[in-house]
Image 1 (cartoon, rainbow, N blue to C red):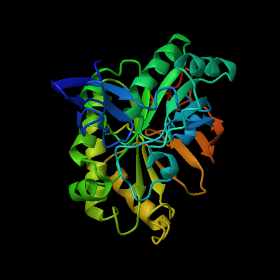
Image 2 (tube, rainbow, N blue to C red):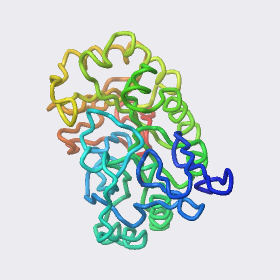
Image 3 (cartoon, rainbow, N blue to C red):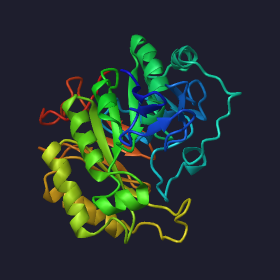
Length: 329
């Protein structure tokens, strides 16, 4: 895809997220890392990761995508949102790039082979804003038979989503169901995120959704109902991860989420027929139950797979019902 379009002699429009920033010569977008340089879009973080680790895929979190896999996780700096609860704010809310760190797409793909990883996750900060770098890595990784994963706020541009034939899976944040909260606090747009979820699902990218629940902020019965209803209308087989908030960044005055809040959200999801709902950031086992017979197929604890009895055909070993997900490489 073309990552920008020319509007006039000195102005281009960035196509790397739904802000669609219009940039004059020398100007940088909201993300802080995409710049108009000589009437072209320059991705300033290309080749310059700020974080690089090997994680279990469960940490993304993806629970229905190759359980037990090791994933090379990479991030840069910058973000197109301004979430006051961000857990990675040290890199996402800065545009300071360490240009002494250079890892080319070829280098990154070689690391996948060297460390025997099953895929690459573009994570820690928002991957849509370093899409040119991610895609170049991803195309090389794809040739090695490994998978590509986005962990995202769901603010990808329509052009990006249409270009994502190389992407296998995504965990998308649904941070609220309040348009004003998205606009005023997060500096995003709820409708755009909902559209991204639908579009990625329509492209057959395996998606799971995470909601960080914060008491008194996004946990009203109305919001929980609207979120559960929306997900169910897209696909009742989309896993919904209900994550507990812990004080961080600009929200140190807020208390950690009560377990009762997570249970209320769980019950709402079940009311609307969601088949797979999980708790995050609390110390309890996460279990995949067969929606048909209730058998405990996969048991995880602290991102470790304790038990996995999914069959080679992706079915329940007890009743042979199909379990939604990507279970084989």
